[in-house]
Amino acid sequence: MERVLEPEVMDTVEEAEAYDAMDHTEANQNFVRRLLDLGAVGKVLDIGTGPGTIPLLLCSQHASCEVVGVDLSTEMLKLAEEHRQRSEHASRVRFQLADAKGLGFADHSFDCVCSNTILHHIPDPGPFLAEAWRVLKPGGVLLIRDLFRPHTAAEADQLVQLHASKEPPLSQRLFRDSLGAAFTPDELEKMAFRAGLTDFHVVVDSDRHMSLQTSARH
Image 1 (cartoon, rainbow, N blue to C red):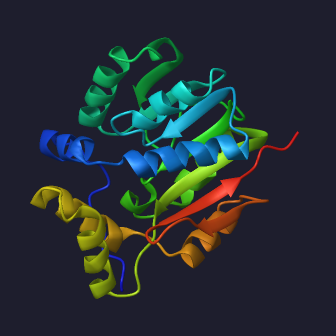
Image 2: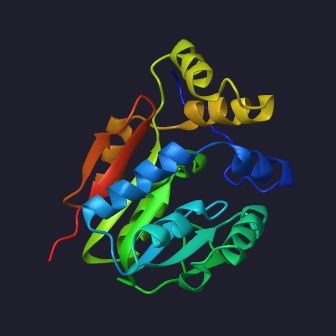
């Protein structure tokens, strides 16, 4: 199946609220569990934080973490801030507007850099991968998880039925479009090498997710 681009930023109220309303509980919990297994502690950057679920969930699971969540969507950040203000972990989380392809942070600023399902939104993720690597401390934890593109359109449609059949039509369409815009594991590995990343692994996590990751090294 050929890759079909979708909009880079989900910045309408309808899209942001539809994404926030989808049930990502299992995927988010698995993501945070993987972060902790890789050794995530300390200062964390979440790129493409969306409605801010990952930072708040991570802080609830580990008392040492302080998280900066960035996104290019103002509508997503409005939702994230609403969730933060209602959270008991609000003091350890902050959100700000930023472009994943040009982060305004100094080199080696974070103990952990993570990103959950924004890779497929970016036409050329090379600058994003390079920036994530630049702001990560040497020996830090990197976890970039995304959907991977199925071989055929029929396989993509089957995944929508399997995982989103109970979701509203807009949510089903967003999921299907994301599958079509995603990369394959081989494509991700080649992009990471070209972006200058080293000592990483690309693993297939589920029937629809893959991860580019590094473990903490001390």
